[in-house]
Image (cartoon, rainbow, N blue to C red; front, side, top):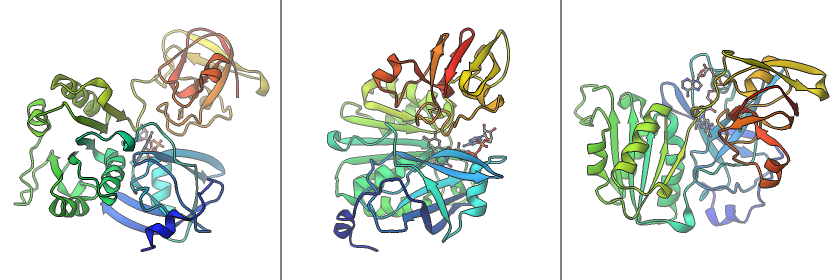
Length: 349
Ligand SMILES: Cc1cc2nc3c(=O)[nH]c(=O)nc-3n(C[C@H](O)[C@H](O)[C@H](O)COP(=O)(O)OP(=O)(O)OC[C@H]3O[C@@H](n4cnc5c(N)ncnc54)[C@H](O)[C@@H]3O)c2cc1C
Ligand code: FES
């Protein structure tokens, strides 16, 4: 391992070079960690919980997807993403099949507003995740432990069964070594092993027992939408102040639908001399992609800004304006993945 102080003195990575996969680890049968580093040694600067956009070319077309960093910025000479192979998924399957040790990949600078508030840490940090939503929580835990913080860390993770707990061995090891790290695994399926005496379902009562005092707590939440909605409600019901809850969804949040139903209008992109049909409730992103307009939708959940476009006439309803500055919003910029039309409109890409 490199000396951490030496790594801190490295020049900051500018996001302008490809990253090479220097290590690959199997975490569960369908999830791998890819450790990435630049060709020339450099330091990655990010907050625990942020994500990068990974860009790949598949059959001549560029695709981008967001992946949370599972590594800690306290070890800055490399970063890691942990990717679940999604059935029928384009980029996750490509990464599993092609990003072997030694191969390179295009990546953005780390970004995102879902990260540990390092400068305002409470007495207790509650990390709640399900499935691959565990990745930002792992980054936060690694950072907290690596930098010697003695805050209580309540790590509550839900998975199908023990075999599908991403980072299982490392988590169990951390829990043994650090008395301030409380690990609670919630497993849907009992695998019959003695090791697995975990609760089968997270409930409000279970949460209230694990977090009896919500007065000095920050909670971070990431997982499938149904899980997030339930857990968010329970946390608020057991007394967690709303401003102490931070959450991120890996999929579109109650977002615009992608199907064409109800009323339809015309979306015109004059620069490309093209008009496409857009339906009520359909995202601008989906309509433009279907019309083969050159727009990139990396996260599709209103957090990365890659689908930014300018509405020059007509009105939209937006569920996210993250990454847009007040000036851009005033100038008509919207996030296409998080916006729906209310009539005919023109856009500039
Ligand atoms: C901020 C952010 C951080 C993320 N971090 C991670 C991460 O750390 N690890 C990780 O593995 N993924 C992460 N994701 C999800 C990731 O960006 C991709 O959406 C995922 O890898 C699927 O992409 P794909 O190209 O393989 O599938 P696509 O070709 O985009 O989708 C194929 C089909 O699979 C469905 N689908 C998409 N995602 C899932 C899923 N997770 N489970 C089940 N079905 C799905 C889609 O609805 C679609 O029908 C993150 C997403 C965001 C927005
Ligand atoms: S695709 Fe990321 S904000 Fe729209």
